Figure 1 (cartoon, one colour):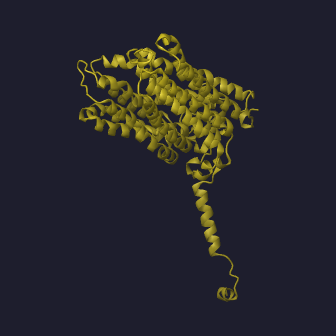
Figure 2: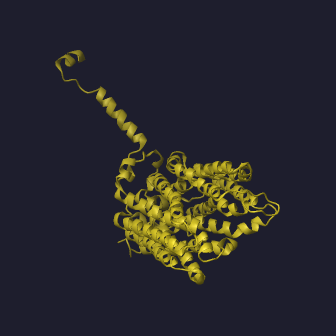
Length: 480
């Protein structure tokens, strides 16, 4: 039920190698990029409250909502171009430039805020544009560096940086706000770390093992034989027509959209639910706010080795493993959300437990849909991630709007129950589509002809057409 080829029998390199160092660098990079993404969510409260030594602004609720959502306007637009740029110019270069520019933008947030909320929205849109490079570039790099026998663990470990980054920002923001820098320090620190990491990764990172200075020949041969990615993949033309005719692609897209809908519903709306219905001020307790994301980050390191173990020992096929873990990651949180809809102010502890489980067990999806791009097409994992993450990003904009349309009274638990039931229904539907249509086998269109090969063939045909032997009598006479 698993997979085994001659390549799988190659000697495994030392326990810690270049691929692990690359994974650590990308994990830190993911954390820092999430600092840039979440800093406005953590900073919007002190930015609109009068505190000693720091400026504040009297923005209306609608203006704050636009500031918070404007990031995604740029983020969604950038996804597909980012995937193509990563494939064309190298994911390392695009990721370094995107992170560095995002870090520089962080430094200008206090200045933009002083100029008005519209200027801050423009800056957040620009931040979203450069942040849109992160996921396509990460997937492009991982498709080159991660052997399929370690795909679940290393990929999940890298992307867990998003959860740890969110948790670190939430838990440390209180200390930063109380420092001499005030809320402005949050943006200065995020910006400085972004520029520093970009410099480090430009020095130590590599697009693939073949160009790495620290990857041994043994490890390079091992990785290249188990990724399924061609050495000349940068010259391959993206087979868009085949991708959009592929049923497994749509199963993957459904799962990605479902995860994103639920994740951002929880991220943006649950603090209001906890405050209004449970009468618990989550924002005043940094540890409680960060707990679900620490749980998710921790569980990433629990479920991913289990997934790889089940696959490598042939207990489950790759396809069945992806479907199983994605089902755990969406359907268990679905049950938690249904239960959360019946919580009251007297059930604070139970509600916190359900909230932590609903977010934490989402980690299993990282061994499901998140690695499935590389399963289907190692050569085009980056562009595919650009498409699915871009369309899924639209749901991160729509989901809060749906919640806003449902809630007329934030203190009414019956209205919140509808919100949770809708989110649970999205989980149920999207994962069902993934279970029905999803696959984890390399698709035929992964080996599309390269651009250079296509041009050579075209030139060859054109040459042949000019040298075809004439068949008419007049043409024969002209030849002689």
